[in-house]
Image 1 (cartoon, one colour):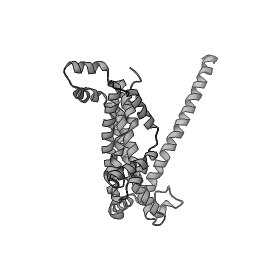
Image 2 (cartoon, rainbow, N blue to C red):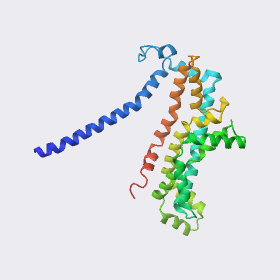
Image 3 (cartoon, rainbow, N blue to C red):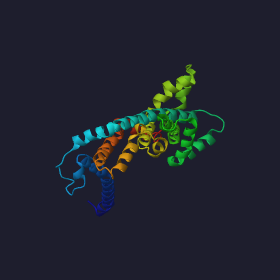
Length: 287
């Protein structure tokens, strides 16, 4: 092997080592909190604050799980159901709306289309916390404050999802296919539902996952809108329990166990829909 070959191989080897090191650190940074959460969920209250935290003694996973669903009359189960309704149903409807709007921006011509789309892009950059107070005032004017609809309706509209919907429509739905469907006598709605929507499946799943994550982790809007604990999502409910833990330490184990269960739906959704999500992220990369 020549000296030039060795010299050329060394930078490549060093670069690969650096990349692997950075990836390894990123993986540890991501997984260590989850590992701590799993270990902490299996400890009783006294073991949480002891020096032998990583010991396998004082295993109380099952007992903590029972305490979680028994605390405050089983309120956690109600919160979990609320979060599933807010997130799963809300993300599904929001994805359908976003993809339909993106399809319309891509395939149809109408007056001031690009200006309206510019407003959509501007809305993407507005933080959700800024919108909480205007949304509360609107909800108060319509009388839906402290109801399910006060949290559910605002999450149905996602400007970033509309932007993604247009990108996916450009990458997945050829104009020639739509013209062929129209020549066969299909109306616009039929063309969209039976032809375009099937092609937009990966994009629909991608928007759904983004919105599912955003709604599931939504905290500030429910805190502003809701005062009835029975309507709380998991994020807000665990926050109230954690605030009470300084006075009542028995809340610590159930908050940790509740936090562990709260991440499971997102992990499950990404695992089950991973194939569609990956293909959706590559939309338009090769055409």
